[in-house]
Image (cartoon, rainbow, N blue to C red; front, top):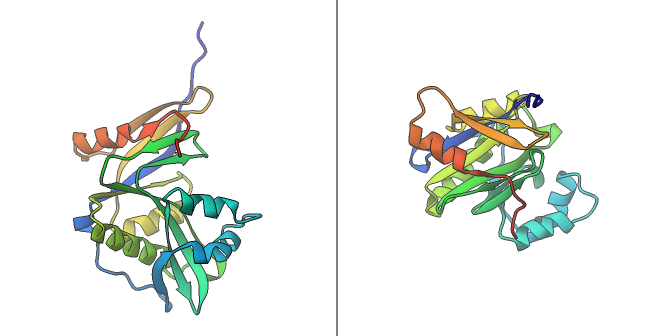
Length: 200
């Protein structure tokens, strides 16, 4: 008898059509939003809790983008963006984006700056920057138990379009559309995922 493979709810994919992006969202404390670059490597390394700057430098060298919120000069929140492929390391999968799409990932707010809507405001800023760059769709994923992230993503105008179910033992996955989401959007969400290693 073949053992039963159990697929667990692994997260939700959210979608923002750039034309539907909200206007700039003001956080509850003064902040400056801007792209982060190699000059911010040390501050990003510290904010991400990394032992050294190798990973941050690798991301910039391979074309990933980063956007940040700064409060009184301190790096208060950040978010990374990929425009072609990105590994979802915690799931052992890869996201392969259609041309013109973008994927927002690895976002965080420093503990001292949480509960001030910085995350939502940063997502709105990122959406505006990507829209200006001609990106047509913006994707973001969120883990099932990250309710704070879900709330911030929703406030930034993203719509939950599909849930991912993953059998971790076999890495088999299924993408199920949310009620009312057009079939073509669900199909695109399903085609994002690959069970393979990323190519740099």
